[in-house]
Amino acid sequence: MFQTLLVATDGSPAADGALAYAAGLAEEQTGRLVVVHVAELVPGRSAQVVRAPEDDVVRRIRGQVASLADAGIDARFELREAVVGGPSREIARIAEQVGADLVVIGTVGQTPGVGVLQGSVAQHIAHFAPCPILIVPTGGSAPLSPAAG
Image 1 (cartoon, rainbow, N blue to C red):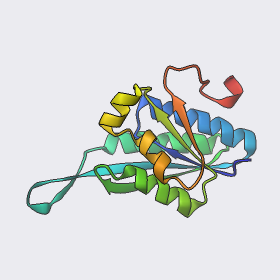
Image 2 (image 1 turned 30 degrees about the horizontal axis):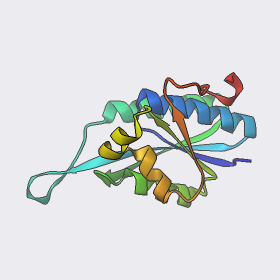
Image 3 (image 1 turned 120 degrees about the horizontal axis):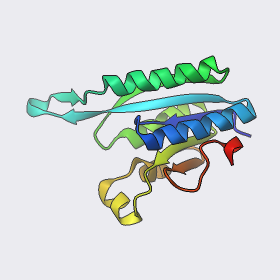
Image 4 (image 1 turned 120 degrees about the vertical axis):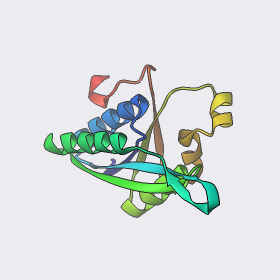
């Protein structure tokens, strides 16, 4: 059913849960994973743009993708950049470019009011994604992989 799954990750525990779930789907359906991290660029002084320091996060995500590939899952990593507030649109753009059948993203399970006020990427991606979205809750009742349920 799903041939190409795009997993959006920020390196958080919620994103790790979404990645594990997507890996289970990909393995079950012999699909491929495109794991995407969008680094946010913060406007600085004098119109300069500053990239948030995320070397450790990127290194960890690359390691996760390498482990999935070593386990026989067709997985690759994409690192992109977007100005603050732009990751949702960039994720949707990548989903379209790779022909994603599903976007998988984690959420920390904030109340709807908090999510709206803080601008949740999981909520915003729903407006831009060219395909269905699966939001995997952290600490909720969803298993970490389809096989675990």
